[in-house]
Image (cartoon, rainbow, N blue to C red; front, side, top):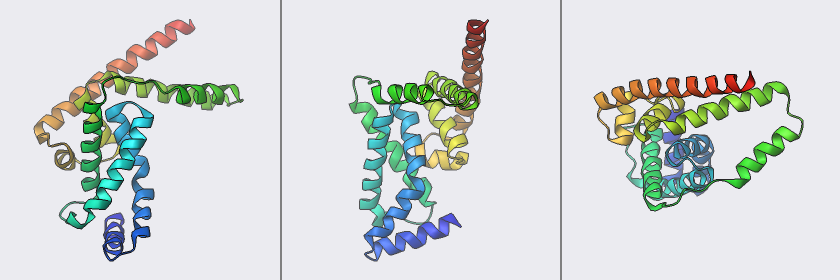
Length: 190
């Protein structure tokens, strides 16, 4: 259903309705930022990269062929933009705004379950950051973006067998990292 509606929107855009492209941006913006974040590990850079990727996709929309899903085509553009940004970025930055917002959210009376949820997400984010770059990309595309191994190959250029190995290693590394982090947290509580 989404694939057909994507094609209809693309046809509208190519017919001259530039505003129809906003529907594609709305549909894929969260995925784009999430994917870029998993490559760059910086929220601001991820948002900027997603924006650049949507602009690039708009400019290249005429070259899109429906041999692959639009989302797969867009993933490839996002990955390329993020890789280019990663190469250009020499110094890692820390988002003060994100840290400040998280502090304010906790101070503003969040419920216990919300704090626990944020803590769990933080552990997962940190664990993802601790695994290798290729493992993180494959895990993100497979589990978060729900792409098949063939689609990940189309996006990254990594062979199917290597993707399977990276997924296996990534799961093991992620599990070990989460075990270590949670064990440390439990020990700190005791």
